[in-house]
Length: 341
Image (cartoon, rainbow, N blue to C red; front, side, top):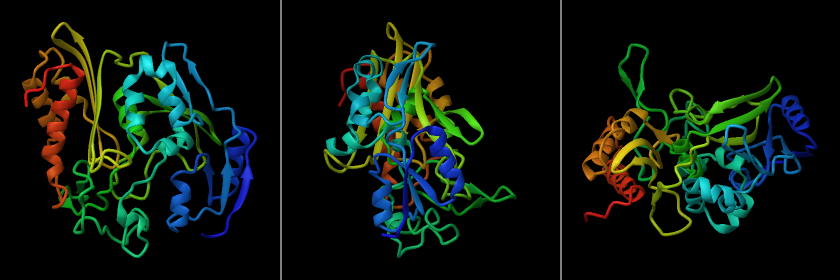
């Protein structure tokens, strides 16, 4: 591991000022991902700014009837919070599908949003990787890419012709898939003050800058995550398909939420994990469900629309059909349909 210095911040302003003062500094709280990346020599921070003593450790009501999750609340405390369990069970379900109990006890909400991809080529510093070293190439495109992205990878040249993707890595979080479905908002503070970022805009597609994972400015610190008033508590499902029953990242995951008026769908949310560089949501596909009856046919139409344009790269092509079936199954379970097969 490379040498680094250490500072313990005593206020949000102190943390931000320390980050502004040193370009190579990084914030650290639970450290469940950053320390791994430092040990693998993927990350080389010159300074760690410890933010664990900052007052961002509570879950509180917001004036609009939603809930504010402090950035330093652990994933475990969030999942088992009585308000989250009652009003946002989809989020609780997604968090408990991720990692191990030990990791959930250590990992924080803000850190969960900042996780980097688990692409094995990203972790292997002996192989080319545009995310780790821009311009070096993507080993996954023509390599073993079973866990990699099928959506949002296409890239166009300036003349509009298709260009070689620069990165097909996926975002690893389960929690973020539920937050995308719920339409959460991320609150951040930087040297220019506070701002909010809609969850759909927080993570980004790789494009020509795959080394940039999100829309945070370099000095900005996540302080909280706001949940909207509607948590879809009655009809929801987080379905995670993976290679083993526990402690594995998703091949495909689906956060599904419905509002029903009798047997008619009045609102729908679908977010996918394990298929793109960010939690994947397509409102046009959700709109296809509004006004439709609860049925496998309605769900299949939404699944087909959501996967339109998906592209496999060989070993991961199976994910296209897997994702469609997972969407239909998750929506059916959210609506409490009896399984048909």
